[in-house]
Image 1 (spheres, helix red, strand yellow):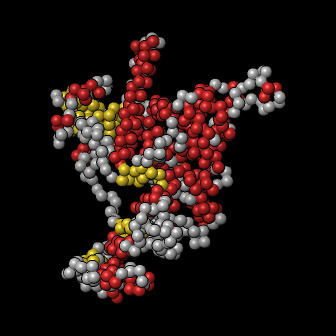
Image 2: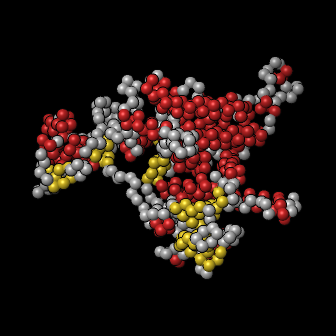
Length: 592
């Protein structure tokens, strides 16, 4: 696997011709490695990395890394450390050990050490609240098997997990001095299952919250600490339990989301415009924070994007909690061995086509919306049965809701009312897709709804723009879109070898991302041209064609006048400017 600046791809392709193409013996690990390295290339650990950043205690911290850690540890206007929004630049365990033994980083060490202490305290409190975490019956594999069996409605399947059923007084095993019945022996299987479900839900929430904004996961690398810190072994167990998914857990997740929404309920309403991955995720996050949400998209519910994306592991714990069994469909093979829609890379990094992620989020939100409506109807029915007086009903909070509306556009925002109104109507480009009666039916119980001819206005407290670069509402009321990131092209060469034990590159091979003008001396030192000229396994045709290999790599390839295999490729009369772009100018190697 090799990552090269775009103009070096030609060399990689030449080398690729030297290997006979066969099916790899370890195809999935090979593909996973390719994806892993691609992710590290896209989200590098430093300015000029060879691969993802790895700390070397002998060399200590480089200046760029110190600056990164200082920025993460800086106290912001909330009075708390700023933290990181991604997991690949938080403090690793070996870096924390190094800070402990270095006098120059006292203040910096204090911030990260506080995070470590806080995490240790949380682990201890979690164990005290959940006694089962210390029980042998709470081993992740046993819990997983138990809950999977419970999904299959086989109540007797828990016998193997919890040992013998509580014996009667004439049981030979009991009278002969066998072991005394444990507390679990006396519990019905349904109760045992409920305890395990509650334990897994608590583990999911615990890991999810560690990776929330401002939490310990935004300062320290949870994975490296739980694998290396002597007092965090239980964190690994909690993490493994949090990954269990079953249908019974799905219902428990919905219940937990609903409970958290009611607990945090602020009687506020938000409109999320746009049902892409950002809009869908924002809908879930806003609802769980106690806000009633209406998601509006001018596209069809069936519209999906087709791009491959990587998900940082701090988001994976959030998705694992929210998606439940849908998460496993995305990232794990099913029980029949069918291939998953995406894959999990090292350190819990997700790799998936965005269309599959969007579909999973949409379906999950749809089911959650139905669940919320059912719970609210049940709550209202109970209140009526309890004969709550009218004056008491007036003090009740607004009914919780999660509306999902498609084929409908936010045409305008009317600010003449006490609360601004989002004006909903037919999409400009697809007016025929709009169904006024369907929209009116969804919003019938929306407090403050106003019918405005062929449109409907609904009041809101928060408007979340997730409509993409062409979002006119965002452009009108906030600002025009800006390009905040720089697009960099990378060439990728995949070597499918006959013998997997043969190394293509030496162990000390370096992978460069410098501008092209910096590469000529490196190429000369590596003697790539001699490799082509002197290799017995390279045909004479290839030797002639790539005789000027160094020039071709630096300046690009020009089309040969005679398109024959034995015609040497010529360099283009271009060089690279200070920005790394090719320009038409005769090269002067002394400048390099």
